[in-house]
Image (cartoon, rainbow over the protein chains, first blue to last red):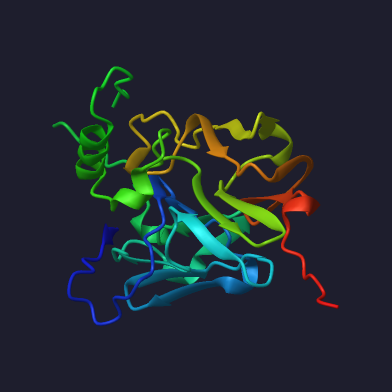
Length: 122
Length: 145
């Protein structure tokens, strides 16, 4: 899995890239993304061909007429695109969102799981 | 980066900080800094009735967040445990950007903030703290007889 270069991307806007962890084990990949302020209804996961797109809209409750005086998180959306490699099974991706943390599990396709190759020594 | 308490020229120091973070001056003018890389990121807003603080702190157990208010300084601390496994022959960490470890951030509240009227809620990984301003300092309409 590699990250797509967003330079010059047509869809580029003021969305922020969420911080992620990507861990690979023998059975697949676990992707964890920080999406604070994104409720389940604001999350969009999209897989097309080998592109995985994570998008999240931040929804905060604010009193009427509030003015921000200090801002470290400036955008209202998160967006990040990853390119999946073909040994990953895009059909069987599972996702869970809890407390602003998204966990995606992307298993390897069955036949791509590592096999031990016996080496015969004659 | 260590704050040099003996700096003779505050503006020079601020400009150095600004340069280091690549930030406009108004974002790093606080003596307690506040770079983008800090966890949790904070947004602060206000209305005539209240001060609203949003701490973007995903993946925490809300009961483990420690929030204190002392002489107009609100401090927020806690710990986020790392999810990363120990790397071995079978697992590989390809990207490890998420913050892990102890954190502490402080916010100076304005003088009219009422320390007895603070509420905090944690939802979708955002801690929203509301501090009400004292009634005496809220704008009032004065009727002209």
